[in-house]
Image 1 (spheres, rainbow, N blue to C red):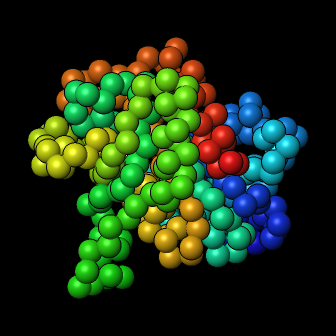
Image 2 (cartoon, rainbow, N blue to C red):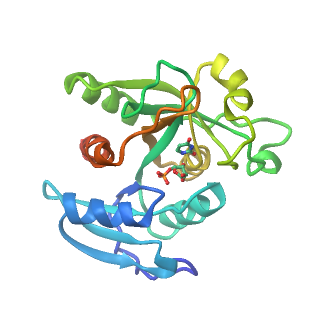
Length: 235
Ligand SMILES: O=P(O)(O)O[C@H]1O[C@H](CO)[C@@H](O)[C@H]1O
Ligand SMILES: O=c1cc[nH]c(=O)[nH]1
């Protein structure tokens, strides 16, 4: 048990999917897991464990942003001995080539957060995805003929900006594809604990064109991402 998690040791599988939204965690457990059971309900930041194709798997909501995510991820790695963490999130596209409903595999995650600054000073750490997971996700996306991209994410501390396209223009010019709010700390903590991590994000909106995913499409787009995450994590 921890201050944020009522699960006992052994309640989580080594593979844990990480959506931001607690209700997405519940939806994943109810729709993809065999025999799901809730293992955490503290603060309604829901966690579940079950099986997928006979393999033990868990899902734990992280909440939004890096401070919240860092708590759940640290505890999953330090207390619950998780080994493979896959974020299944949404993101905003930063270039016109990244369309809504596309999937972005985050090979690296820049950030505006100061969370790592004192830890690595005088260096700047470069949080990166686990190559094995990234390669498996890339292979899966090719085999399934998905609309997808591999590239940088930016994990922002700020959802509402005065002029998002302007704020992210330099990052976009340097190949960063999409913005979300959690991958950078996930990659940093996975590196610290010797675990594997990957952020798979579905594009829910484009910050350049203003296009947004329709609510009717949301579920089927997320289905694709969850199937990919479970396949890749259990290989
Ligand atoms: O859909 P999730 O996983 O919550 O991810 C994205 O959505 C939230 C913002 O609306 C942030 O958590 C961001 O990273
Ligand atoms: O624009 C977006 C969409 C999803 N998540 C974000 O953080 N930003």
